[in-house]
Amino acid sequence: MGEEKIKKESTRDGFGRGLLHLGETNEQVVVLSADLTESVRAHWFREKYPERFVSHGVAEQDMISGAAGMALGGKIPFACTFGAFASGRAWDQVRVSVAYMDLNVNIAGSHGGISVGEDGATHQALEEIALMRIIPNMTVIVPADGPEAFDATVEAVNIPGPVYLRLGREAIPVLENRPKFKVGRADVLLEGDDITIIACGNLVSRALNAAAILKKKKINARVINLHTPKPIDAETIIKAAKETGAVLTAEEHTVYGGMGSAVAEVLVEKCPVPMRIMGIEGTFGESGTPEELFKHFGLTEDDIVKETEILLKRKK
Image (tube, rainbow, N blue to C red; front, side, top):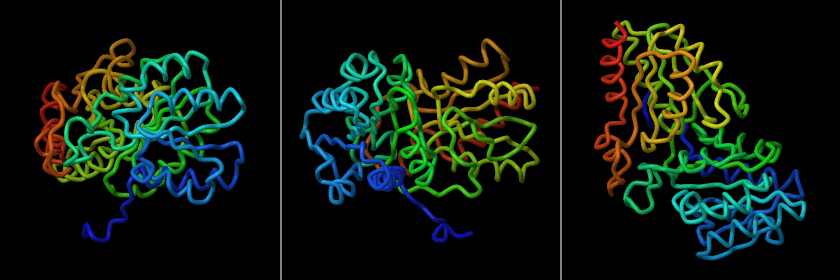
């Protein structure tokens, strides 16, 4: 199938659609933005429900504190900005004002990862999964496509305590035959017995493409969409490790403390197997097109295939 025929949608667009749906179905939902309303697709909600929308300007800490107050008042807030600011600049407010009190505050961090492209290192948040998952009570979700971002947004209001949604700017392929989203469940998208590839976000579609290449080389890879790094689905991960004997993780995030680290924490205690964590290895991002950056940082389909073949040698 030609690339032009593949349906694509960014996860920020799926989030924006989800906000509209919640606006129609739940009057307690309110949206807060920190000067990046259009970029995070919160303007669709603002245009239809202006009385339930608050713009805080360039004041991310104030936005998170305001969201905490609204949650204490019985509202269900969604606080939206770039992930670099939501997870970094406002981390203290997220930790103390939101998570410490276990409030139902939903935080949407858009433009995560190197796929932001030309915005450069300051706006390419590579640390959000690590920063958010170490906070007690926090649920962390990294949708793999636009429809999954929609489902996760809608489901967020039913998840006890705070939720962090990691979203991206780039339009990415919509997955076919994706299981219905369920928080805390790892979805097996492709069965295989030779190796397990676990990915999140836009690396999921790349993992599936890599598995198709590996299939032609007589290597059957199991592909898992770990859309919820926290709480993590240890059962599915351990089962895959036992049955395939090796695990490769891939994410658009630093290799320190991210989704791959979460998987490693499970396996080192329950089922140690040869493992490799693919991601950004100890550097900041750079400016360039998304595809240029994926090649530069070694996160393309071909890179996944290469690392799989290396890991299989360790397995033997």
